[in-house]
Image 1 (cartoon, one colour):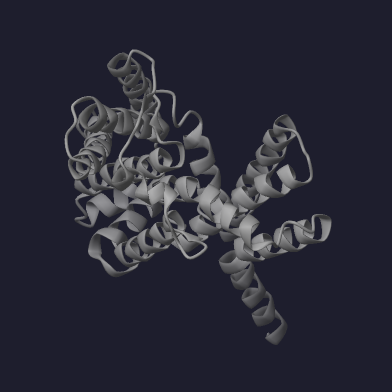
Image 2: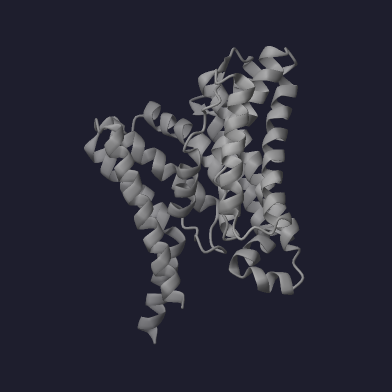
Length: 320
């Protein structure tokens, strides 16, 4: 009996801290292979590089917790920042209004995703968000004439450019957002509803949970986080491009799954998602330090994603 208890505890530790152990092991290997990896400048560069994906991934976590997905986050990022560019650079409005407009556009785009899913009774958000992914990207290209907008003010660039000491403001923003979303998912009724919907949508509906309302909130927040990631991207590039955010949704999905969330819904944490985003950033940074080509990096990331999904499948089988 005692032996069985030890085995169960081991599974619990592996499920709860597996992503963290993976990040630590990966960091140790890269530190051995590249002396530059543990330098402060490089570590802060990793924090800076991971910030945009981390913000999008935290938003992506919510749909995945409900056994859904949001393929439009990269396009939402693009349309949010180009409209911000129009408002502040072309129309000359105050930067604070531009920041508000950016977040508002992101939230409204996410809201539309939620409404399309719930009001049209589409079978899966893959369909609605695949459609809006193209709509939002097309609108971004139309609005700008397929040309980037340059010349943003310091206030708009602040989140992506500024530092507190050596620590990027963007990474501090990520930690703050993680705390807020952790509290939201673990301490509020809506957060518990999100997990319940992912566990069994029909059972959640029969138990009185307002499933449609919760899903609308989920996709609105996903769009809002995409826009917030866009503000950080503006700061890093001082530009708003209509092709910004291409394939960002794939990295966000990868971070969520690598961080221990389940594609089947109901399982996942904010901190695991952050670790997943860090693993992707550390892996890319380490491969760059080792002189690995971008093509090979893409292959490696793909293999990591497949392994993460396979682990999720094995975990699900062990519970059945």
